[in-house]
Image (tube, rainbow, N blue to C red):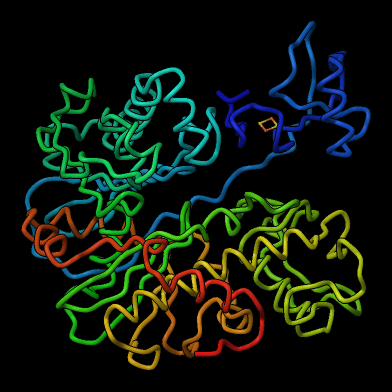
Length: 472
Ligand code: FES
């Protein structure tokens, strides 16, 4: 089923329940453990967890998952014309996007999108690191190299002799997998890999058909701040302005960059997973069936579902809206407690939000808010000194900025916030037109901050857990 795009978010351990399939025709009896998990997940008689199932005969099943929306990018940017064709690749944990550009004109000639085949080993980075530690990195390296190579083949078709440059961006773990680097240092505290630099390949080394002698995987900035964030910095231009900017990417981790042309400080927080649907009982990525925005709950829920389908879960932007509306309509107290004393609130059948989900949201928003506060402090500046806040990634596309402020995730005025879209891809395209001097200059003034190592982090984090305005 994985070959057909079905994801196994917990890596097939039977924990997440998100690989559920409904049997329409045929028989597939669950074993006692499988049956227990189905009961715990409150899945009906016809449902099975694909990862715990073995077919004994032909089956017809309905898959509970739908197609993920993959964000390409058409953001205009300035460039010095180059020679030949180039390909920019955003190698995401979940999704892959590649664009073919004419380097003389900057025109996008073709786009290819796809799912990262490594999702077979789990949707999150931890599951994939575990899989690599257990079985070795080779399979994960090979499968991603093959898939990206296929996408580039599809992009180029017969135009292969003119391809001069391929630029690839991704988070630190993806960089290690693609480049075949040792992932062990990323698996244990202090999570510091000695192998973060620029990696260059030729098509022969990667076993690709399409002929290109300059294939670069751009350098990571720190343990969990990858070249996708470096590309985001390039896309915003924050590295060249005197005024201060904040870049936030609520993807896999929740990375933050704060700074200006003199110095950029970056950090990763534990804020990402909640906004990608992990750890939220009915959480899901922004795919068909996800509640993506909510404007009312009390007197008849008012919401939008991706694909105009029946709601079947809630994605990150919907979660922010849900919490903001629950606060607004008096369902929640200032510490996030459900005031009725119940353990969950119905948003729209079957989608509920539980007390534990709200706590997860609070942990994520407090980690993000505390991270920004620490980086501002290290710059000796206040929120008022920030000129622009950029919110990157697919997540940013749907969020309601007023609700971001209402929930205390970010405390700057909405007019200073900008939704960036796929900034990793925009930055990758911009880097097709420059040499490595640009990224060397940015890396020279970019410093990775270990938030947990800051003595004030815990206090600020606890202060930001509640929904009351912060004390400072
Ligand atoms: S229960 Fe998580 S992949 Fe099957």
